[in-house]
Amino acid sequence: MAANAQQAIGIFDSGIGGLTVLREIRRRLPLETIKYLGDTARVPYGTRSAQTVQKYARANTEFLNRQDIKLLVIACNTASAVATGQLRGAFSLPVIDVVAPGARAAVEATRSGRVGIIGTEGTISSGAYQREISSRVPEAVIFAQACPLFVPLVEQNWVDADDPVVQMIVRRYLEPFLDFGIDTLVLGCTHYPLLKQAIARFLGASIILIDSAEQTAREVDATLGTAGLLRRDPGGPPQYFVTDIPHRFAATGSLFLGEPLDDVQLIDIM
Ligand code: DGL
Image (cartoon, rainbow, N blue to C red):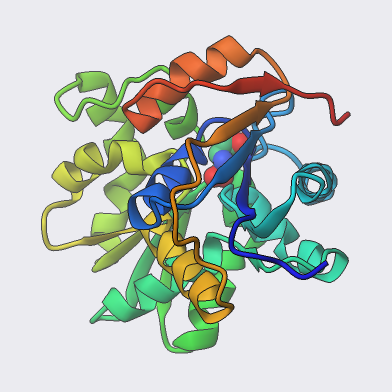
């Protein structure tokens, strides 16, 4: 059946982090209906092998594909880094990932060609951001660093730029970037936009921070617009699906979204 504008946008992430992407998509496209799947039973993805994340990403997409969606957003950077090609090959839906939009924005922003990337261990070791940037600017000098403690820090809501614990961890991971002389840093993980203030304060105003979520929302807008699939009337609030502990998702998720999360359903896709 051909896609139509009334269908929803499907978004999946390993858990709550993708709500930063949902928030940007809603800000840009407030009329759209969104169906969001957080794979809370199997989070985190960032410490798992590419094969395992690919398997999870496929199961998530199969579920959302049955929910009458017109476009899929892989909101998780780790899943985007290792599973985008496979999902595009296996499903006939348009699939938007978060790595390519973030990399493109970094390429547009950098003046010196010295670009930093931070993300989960899975994202950094996949080399996906590095490849995307180098394919556009072959002479770019790229410094990449996994920051595994950032995810639990954010999930504890320890994000305050004045908190000495936050400052210490930010310094430990990001100090090398100052020596590398980057002018642009890609926040290559769903959780990192919540640490933006602390990161910006440490690195200083001259280093541009790239938030993949904003760029991804732009890409969703452009893709639906070109296909004539943008909604013209309000589609109602988002619907949330999780694979474990809905009340925890609702509680932590409201910190990410800045509003209460209604309509969280537990599903089984194991
Ligand atoms: N959503 C993941 C990402 O953007 C972070 C959390 C996880 O490791 O699952 O890479």
